[in-house]
Picture 1 (cartoon, rainbow, N blue to C red):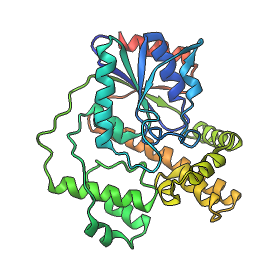
Picture 2 (picture 1 turned 120 degrees about the horizontal axis):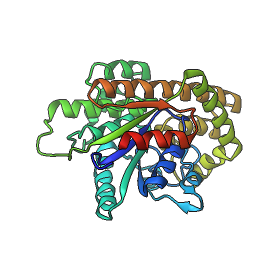
Picture 3 (picture 1 turned 180 degrees about the vertical axis):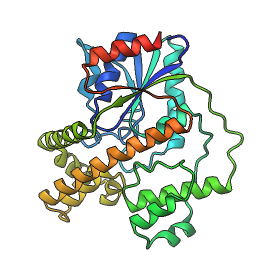
Length: 304
């Protein structure tokens, strides 16, 4: 593995990324850096699919980073992710350990694999006022006119779409010279899963997490003072579960709309990953339905 600085495991939601990455890290004596835009939030566990129990292999804990690092209600972003990633990566490597990156947030992954040169983007009140009355569909059409530097897999709420446009406008007007990101050589593995199997896994996992208390998780966040608007901003599970918790959707409406939204999200993830390939990130695809130990052996052979 000496020719690679890290191994990256990516794929759509419910494809088994975490369990495979943990098995691989255990074999390599590596540590995992998460690349998930929602798992950074504390106490947002079931809705983000942290599956922290998967980080135990044969009674041993596989260390992980960039999970549970900020409070709910904060607005985390790709600029902060790059900074936090480099801190974690440098720390792991300084201790002589290998790095496995695991996640499904395409923008976060591409920002480190392609070395995006980013700057913090301030709020633009005038632009926000201008966009305030537009629908999510209209905002999505606006985003399509920009280069793909925004995370369109996650723009499933009006506020997130407006923020994405705000970022695009800022980078259009401000050059990014002067902030370098190191070149990292990654063996990048994509988990390929057919559409129907993916749909079945998504639906099964959604029912399972609801049975394990995902609605209570959202109610607890609301009770501790996290605003409904902030939870809705995070999209997907937190959007629809919050709307149910505050009485705007029945359980049946929430389940139906959320199930559809997650299926659409997984499709957008795959579109992003295929775009990453076109933009210069080589991804070696393997069958997500094969046993994890077989896929680990395949990856180790690739690394050699």
